[in-house]
Length: 285
Length: 239
Image (cartoon, each protein chain N blue to C red):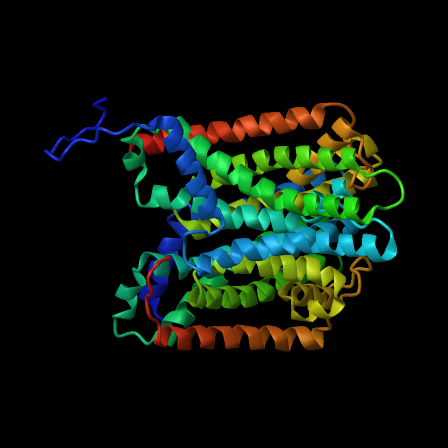
């Protein structure tokens, strides 16, 4: 296989070629480690681990409540909605570290001169960020569930709720990753990437109560429920209500039916499309 | 104040994509105000809801973050700050100039749209528009100074600023009332509360007698510290 560009007379490599699949997996693992600052300086580990520890605090409180008071703390279905600022900050702080340096130092052509293609490069980044976000949410949920099994509360364990929350956490991670990476890849500057991701999240957070309150005061209750879907966390909560029949974590519930799930899929497709267009352009540079 | 430094900073802030972010938030605020106006929800209650939730609690810290860190952090990141610092301009003057640029940006992109959005909803009733605009202006000045300092102190200025605005001012402030004393948002709300006579503003946790001195101390302290910090600044290696 002679896919290399230059042959400047060095001895050739005759060993096994591991191929694009291996390269993609290696890039995914490298990006995932980079998100948590593993293999980088101590200073870049502070932020991701601090946020991960903050995510674990409610789990610890929940387990303590179950052990000492024999009652459940935070519901599985409510975890992501309640912890949404922390998850959003993690996304905003770490999404630019996944995509920005390669764009900024223009090393993308170096990757692409190897067996890795643009599609594989982008999917490696998306998978790494999704996995990081999923771990961030799934770890505390699992901790609570294990605690619940060990403490043996009265009544059956909430396995269905736990698995439902995990499924929705995965969907949420995909949605957040797609948007976070698409926004972060638009600028090669890390600080600006952080600011733009958090700005879009805060817009979606702050617009909800204003629109909901106004529509409610006009007695448009049915229309008011759609306002919740502007925010990704409540959108996924609506999906969870539709798929698993959990209790809504919003005032007044959500619009019924599969609409939230369809919106989620459309948003994911849109953001992936933006990401693909961005990298098509970046690869051509 | 050095006009050349100010001109360069304005150009760097306004000439790039940062301007899109600076415009996005005020446009969203005015868009929401227009939406409320069109749906007939334009009363004092919804105006104050919009002002408190959106203008002060969301837009102001974010714009403060973008403008405050934006005047200096990219230069430090790129290393081009060395060209500025090797000129015979006093470093505290550089810090003061950058602060003035950031503060003026916040006046234009935060305080003016805040006044306009409130004016769209309730005109000049009970001083709501003026109160929130002044709160936004003074709060914006404090944010600009604080985030400028953060930009000089650390390369993670934006993330730390977001954590301060979201976790400390948002989550902690709503559970622990004492934390609101150290929240720039609450100081801005206190000013709005003081000026407006509307009955729909809840009593804020912070009094005006605390808010004004706090804003002055934070602003002056942060600008002076940023100047001192720049005097002994060393460009360390990137991570």
